[in-house]
Length: 182
Length: 235
Image (cartoon, helix red, strand yellow):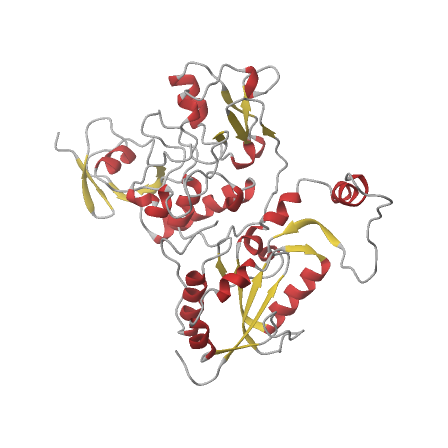
């Protein structure tokens, strides 16, 4: 591992559940070793709101369910040399994409108008709210993704393996046991 | 009976009439496959078992072995094509492994692991396919069907019931149930049928016993598909 300059790592969760971020924290005390080689840029862990222009690695959890997700993804692609899709939702849309066979109008109607127990429900239309996309999309359908870590979530060990491979300049590889889609 | 051919540099013996796949399996060499099943007549449709015989591509489940053949299987080129085929199967259906009862015992998933499929690569179709929960014992989730036709062959050739069929052509091909209503409940299908046992993915599922085996103890958690692990759990 190179000690010359710390790699800048940015992370975000789009249409995800933060489970992949929790799994990232599951590398436990290896975080200290990792921090000898990387520093966090934009991330829920730092609360930095935008990527620096010279990020080395961007880690994206979650797919694209609304317009803001797409803006954030494009910011990451623009500013990160290497982009990693982490988890089932980033890779194939995951759980949120299971709405894809239903028309968006039907979903909004059911959630805000016709569900039992709703009185005078209205579909939120505040201009600050990002507009939902018609379908949830995996992130590789919008920008180029360099590496993928499948899993729901991937284990801390799988995340550790990919990051340490990248830091050491190796092609990341997950063998049997680390590679899983669930 | 001293016929042999060469598979990735290994000498493989075979008996008259055996296919490349049968001879390779007997010799303990794994060739990825989805629509092939040793108990059934080959269908030759998934093309995962494609190999190069004397430089030309062919399906190893249908190609008879012949003396002196030079067969290439485990090469970067062929595995790359197998991976692309697998990725197409994933994007054509709705394969959400985390919420699938077959996960960990699924041959499609295990084959994708074997081929190092890190992403689906292509754009997803997200097709709209209804499930059939009409039968008291069995759920049909067509979202996961890869059209291997194993249930069709099992029901027709072993059970003698013809419960399933492939209908349509090309990209419109789909699995259908042979009843006027199209519902499984209106057939004589039972859990004891061979057709209930052969689905390599999570289409034909026994009701009320999903996720019976914990993660870590399912067939392909324990050993990769190339090790010949049998999928009997969770069916």
